[in-house]
Amino acid sequence: MQIVSLQTNPARRDLDPATVDSLRNAWGGGEITWLAPDLAAEFAVASVPANAAEVAEALRARGLDVNVLPARGRRKRLLVADMDSTMIDQECIDELAAEAGVGPRVAEITRRAMNGELDFEGALRERVSLLEGLSETVIEHVLRDRITLAAGARALVATMKAHGAHTLLVSGGFTHFSASVAQKIGFDEHRANRLVVEGGKLAGRVHEPILGRDAKVAALDEVARAKGLSPADALAAGDGANDLGMLLRAGMGVAVHAKPSVAAAAPLRIDHGDLTSLLYLQGYAEDEIVTS
Image (spheres, one colour):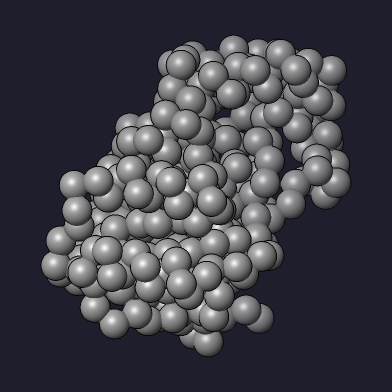
């Protein structure tokens, strides 16, 4: 048995019951369950038609996120989440680059790396090299004035933790940021790359080895083992090419407002909803979400 999940943007709450009913009837689904009025609904199906992907794409163009996932084992006991452009709205290295006067150059490298057009490790070294000489104090300024938490981030983590899940923030960015972001959102632990700082200034290097795609997969496996879990018990969320390995490894891998190549390859994708969408994918109802 599989679950067909339909969601829209919480700011609009315009999920039309007629659209949900029409899809249920076309796909031979069971009773519709509304997890949140006008926002998130689902129904079970024995199978989906051959054109399911095309139908989902057409609905996605209308502002709806449509995903099909197994009915069993939906509520995950481990959350492994990317930071930049997933749990926060920015790419931290791009914000540092803007302060260093090399913003456009670094942002273009970031874009290409996150879409899988460049080797992540090499692209990170190149971008960090352009920050050489930037005062370490700029990091606190960027954290305070430029970084915002993604909508639904706190609710996602708080709700999963309230139901016994362990939460890990794993980033190809930097510990200077992940430590603060993890604390603000409520993650149990965090991992990221470490910038080399000499004499109070960024040295233009990052400590090796770099935490990239393979390291994120390894972190998922390691933490799952430590908690007596398997990768199937994990929900992984991310947006970039360096996240795709863990998205494919986890029992529930979700591309969140992801780069095109990642969205196309990920098992599940959220293009319109916020991070509470990951709770609805697990079958949580709106009144179960922890918001305080």
